[in-house]
Image 1: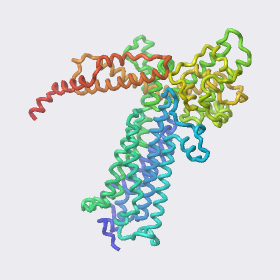
Image 2: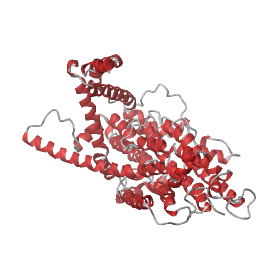
Image 3: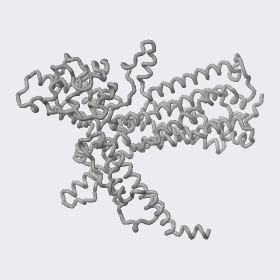
Image 4: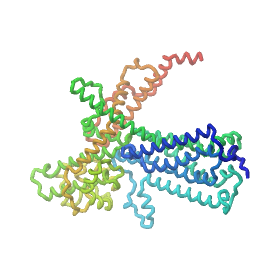
Amino acid sequence: MVDNSLPGWDKGLQPLNALGVFYVGFDIVWTLLVLWGLIVLWRNKTVPSVRMRNVPLATCSVIFLHGYGGFYILAYPLKGSISCDLEFWFMCGVLPIGIALFQASNIQLLNVATLQQRFLRYGGTTNDPTPEEIRCPFNKFRCWWTHLTWAKQTMFGIGFGMFLELASSLLIYIGSRKFNSHGLWSKYENRLQCRQGIEWLPTIIWQFFWSWIFAPCVLFKIRNIKDVHCWRLQTSLCIVAGLIALPMWLGSLYSPNLSYRQMNTYWGPPLWFLPGIMMMELATLFFPFYEVMFIRKIQARASQTMGDLEALRSSGSLSKNNNRDYSLAALEKVLDSDSPRFLHFAATHDFSGENIMFLNHVRDWKAAWGRSPATMKLKKPNADEMESYRRHLYNVAIEIYVTYVHLFGAEFPINIESDIYRDLKNVFMPAAMTLMKLPKRKPSQSGICPVTSDIEATAGSFLVQLPHDNDQNEQKTPAQEYEDILYRGHQNIINMVPRLPPNTLIPDSFNENVYDRAAASVKVLVLRNTWPKFVDHEASIHESVAAASEPLFRVSGFNNVTRLWKTQRDATERNYHEKRARRYETSRPLSSPDITISMALFPSPHPLICFLCFASFVQRGGIWHFLTG
């Protein structure tokens, strides 16, 4: 039978024309770029900004997506020699799996942003029940499903959807006569009708769900994320670029318009998915490469600035206007005096809040060593009290280890050297395995431990008082109680209820310096990655506020008006963040004179901005050009 349904596709292989040469050359160059991007991605997978992207999952999605796109770019040079069976499996197997894997890796953005917000919550996690609080002896699946996070539930949903897609495609392939002679329905007529019919319904439903239902929901959920990794921008670009694929693919196959039929000769219907695929690969491979280059640039600039500052200090000509101090001393000063604001930036912009929380908790834990019975009692403590206090601090150290260090127990394990992790593992791992098997603390166990032999029984003599809480009587989950204890400093650490059995063996190598090497490593990591970004962010806000304090008669032009509007927005956002930060660490009140000045200058921004825009419009002759045409 002569297949004349697609003009020019029934002649078999022919010598390549100019368009065919372009397709082949473009496919080769694109494939080489993708391979280079994968190599760069794997070589930099230890970089914190790349490490959080789930590199193996992203690599698998790129392989499937590029396998589809690279194959169909050669559709025109092959001139219709692609069989309908092969195209069916590419459309119903390779492409759906690639998109599903990309969406699964894309969920990582929302998952990381959501989990990082837990570092900023004063009351700990949400009021979700833990598995120990769910009494469902006849429904084990509900217990298991409720225990999963939203991201893991979504991952399992994506995996189940992939299984349904492949299973339905296999049943359709076996039952249709378009692909084999022993089917139950349909029949093969020509190449175009082979690509039409109910056989393609699973992939149509799959593409519609991802492009027009799931993707807009993700776009809505990430609308308030303002990170320095450009994840929200990448996600938005991929979603927008993929919206056109399904309608154009269906239109090119089912439209009776002759223009579509002629265009199919040079641009096959499956190629309408190519813009979205290329944008997904660009976001997966080349945005991380740009970020790695950007991090190296700011690290080099920070090193150069630190050298210039030292030279200026030695010459005694340090300028007061230079407010970008990238030094370790400045970092330690902020960690001690302005930690909440730095934590808020790290958690909401850089997605590295676990590093700041680990440094804060180690600092408070070491401060608790200074509140031992030997230093807080007038009389000399006995050996039992000292051992009880040491055991209690070991319990707290175990909680810190499980929350931030353990590779499988921590949601965001800190990035430390292997030898440091090995030393901590030797000290804490046996007790950590016991701790992770124990049930969570019951809500009734908050406060002072009822065991009289424990150190908490004499907490009143240590001059340590629990902070007053308005919602102290509110019932909280065990996870909330632990986070309340850790997130409020060493006062609560001293009064923390231990979960380990009292006969747990404490290693001889455990002392107050056990976390020093890990804290130093994390501090260097913060100094090289998060700290320069925070300094630039704060400096840009200060510069914008300083520019906004200029006299109004010096402000002219639309660019300056835009600058004022951005200053207002940044100042308002920073003021909001600082108010939230005061809730997390009330013992260190924050002052924001720049924000006060900015808000005093512009108490009601909208009329002023409108007036300045109108003044700039008149100044540039906009009214005259508008009236005279």
